[in-house]
Image 1 (cartoon, rainbow, N blue to C red):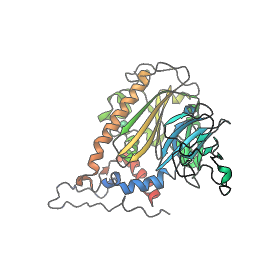
Image 2: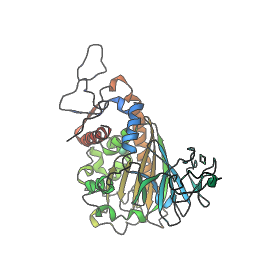
Image 3: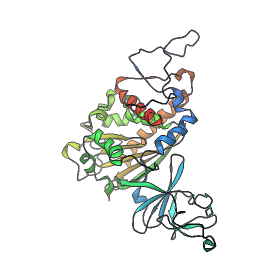
Image 4: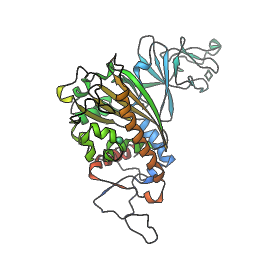
Length: 389
Ligand code: FES
Ligand code: FE
């Protein structure tokens, strides 16, 4: 049974044209309306999303290979928390809330770095092993009441998949197989279809970080539809002519979008890219697949590389997106491949930034409409509102 929804997301739309309110447009009852504009601007709602979505679901936070060896660390933001990821001496990556158990100081303030031996708090020098146990503190022997086992770092749930580190802050996390891998299976039909790209064996060719002045949901919605492709993505529609008709059928049936007959590769000018990845099937060649793994990951699969976007929402109107281009080891000619999706990103994020101010306008108080090719955005809205209930 569906739980009641958060009514901030589902105020009944005002569908009347009122005298003196020329900005409010009457819509047909059969049309699917979007969320109201306040869903993209309300700080209280954003806080609720952080608590009930980003702190409860699995989120993808780092490329595992960036944690290069024992003691390598990265700090990442998950919901309202800072999390420190550390590779241990046993080679495993662990995640801890980045908060000292003594008086709460942040253990690591740099985005990344290399620990010398342990995790030592810079305030009073409480020291934790790379596995999170409290192992030393000045004068600890004079504090018999401090149980070392009790005062270790808070461990977060962590999985590695596709070469990335995924974490979940929930005490009792949802099934990774259902919620993360299941999204991929829903889009592609089976997990083999992504396993053939052997994403974990690819290496980072380029990473670009985009600081986007937009609510995270606008970015997800934009990624889920291709109604905009003909308007704003000239380079992409050259390579994927199917996208020019605005239907983007691959989002529904997982067949992938076919390259244009004269496109030799998924590159900014259609020139050949790198060699095809060895494991992919014949019917995956010359095709592009796009997958949204809610709430904050987009994966694009093409024959010679994989593009992974990770979002970190920082405020109702600000989202950082990190985009990684992953190639087979040894591939060096990547500029034309990177440039294609970098332009797509710039075009998409400019569209999201152009939309964000309208969310606060009285013209969008009741939201807009979803045309048929955007109907799955309505499913995303239901997914969000179910989690806020
Ligand atoms: Fe960390 Fe005191 S706050 S040692
Ligand atoms: Fe786009």
